[in-house]
Image 1 (cartoon, helix red, strand yellow):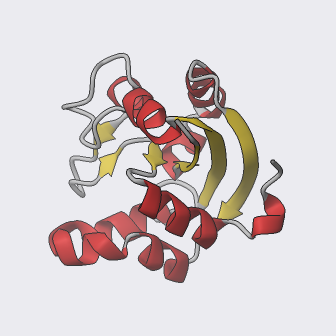
Image 2 (cartoon, helix red, strand yellow):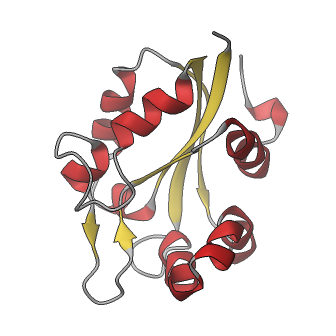
Amino acid sequence: MSEERVLILIKPDGLIKSLTGNVISKISETQLRIVGAKILNVSKELAEEHYFQLKEKKPEIFKETIKYIIGEFHTNRVLALVYKGEDAIRKIRNIAGKTNPEEAHPTSIRGKYGRINSKTGVFENVIHASDSLKNAEREINLWFDEAEIVD
């Protein structure tokens, strides 16, 4: 099996709740290698490009999701991470849990720390994790310059 890279974002609700250490500790259980990390403010343009598929698939939640990731509800910072290793995407997706925190296993990151915002209906699910090789490549290139990844 070949090594894969995966993008992980610890979202604004994860940062405002000081969950960064908890999330990274949980991710360390995968024994994947961290090859990129940075904290950044998310522009509306970056958010819209990242979530472009959501605009087509679920337009009813697109605007609120953009507001969430650019920090209108919490903070405008995210921690972007790139991990690498065998079967990285599946391992990270398992630890992250289902997108909807109410459907996520209680020991997963989203099951343990996520919630659905009752005012907006947005899944404040703490973490984003690439869901396929194609999306991982696109997302990593969107959030990182190749020089920022140390492998």
